[in-house]
Image 1: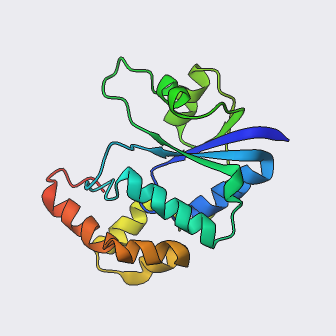
Image 2: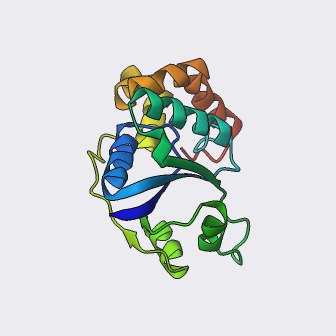
Length: 179
């Protein structure tokens, strides 16, 4: 078995597809590093939650879902600030030593492979259903069905921090409208 695996996501919000990813990675590795991507952003259409809030969301959810927390690390991974920066090196600087990364994002795969990290794709779990962008769009439409797309253990936290209100306010406050 592989010693330590990495997965990276923005978790805006954490949904059932992410839990599938975590379980998949833990079934193939002794330990899992969860990288919180775009960690420097908050209160934006694509990033309504801060890195600290996402970390709390992940830990609370993992605990309530029965994940082995002693096998899981969480690291914040910022985006690059300029084209000259090497995002793969930023990742290596922010996480403990890893043996493999699991990702389906082409840019993530490219950047990690460039710095010598072995990357494998993950089978998608109902990708057409579980996608954070889709969840945020449902919120903007006032469609409460988004709540069924996140674990109940995540929903409690999202209600506590007024995730719906944040998504709406972030769209009002940013004219670019990217969701």
